[in-house]
Image (cartoon, rainbow, N blue to C red; front, side):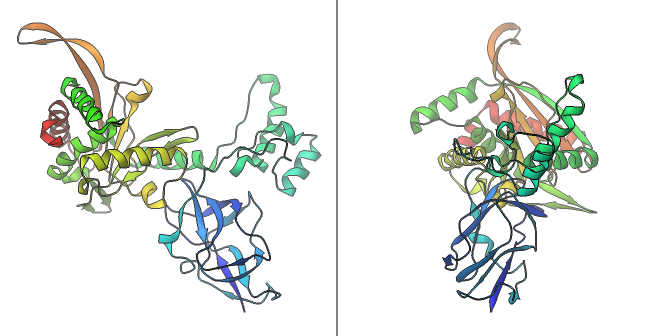
Length: 387
């Protein structure tokens, strides 16, 4: 009897997902663990493997369609068998989550000269309003044109005299909107600032680059600097759960990555369990995969503390928003020459801005300042944590 494979819940609060690309077609023979389809969640594009061997009898949706968790993704059975007589499978038991991996970027460019990708209902809506789909930039998976893209143009026609454009939010941007809004509404943020003398830090980074023969992300050094502070002040590596504060003894340090589609904050898992050289490699790899939307669901949602480098974009002090489910985030700004008073005289040095935001429900001002002081001391003297 045919097997009805339903979209599993692969984490990160998944409610539904968009079909990016099918790897199979009706009539194809598949083996267990063969990749069936790529789907886009709010944070990443992932490949869904087959939990069953057999012949593909029916696909649950066209490319660009949205399927809810628990909805039929594909029907697999014997060749010539009807897809109507099926054995329903629980969506929580249809696939091994460990075999679900990140896939290719979600918004790949369309093939030059190809027909614009759009569902029939979208084409019909465009035709009704005289809209040429060849002139529409799609925001869906694989640059597919969505109903929202066409509706935006229809709405724009009525306000064109006001010189306005209505741009539909992408799935990822909608997720960022929801997460940031929830964090700002529910967490009472406090942000404190410091300027560190970055002379030793930058010298240590140059020495490390010379020794390793490759670029060393400043985020990796900051991660190394905050680990001792997190161990000393566990409230900053925690989750507030009702009347309990869950102090985490695993250190999965997230790094904020700026991408063309929005901010992604994936985590280096067990950052305290690797050497500094390996941490450098992991941060570089994670950043590259985040920019390609290829992080795993675990990496996308697993951070216990976050490091942000707004200095990479020329920023200084900032007021970073705490990722929901954590209690703190630290950001560093761009290092710049400055004149300071030292031992009664004026000297030239290099200062780097540091900002710390924390959840005032569980962290008071004194504790926040002690944590920031520990981080500043470590950054100013890298021998404290790099040796």
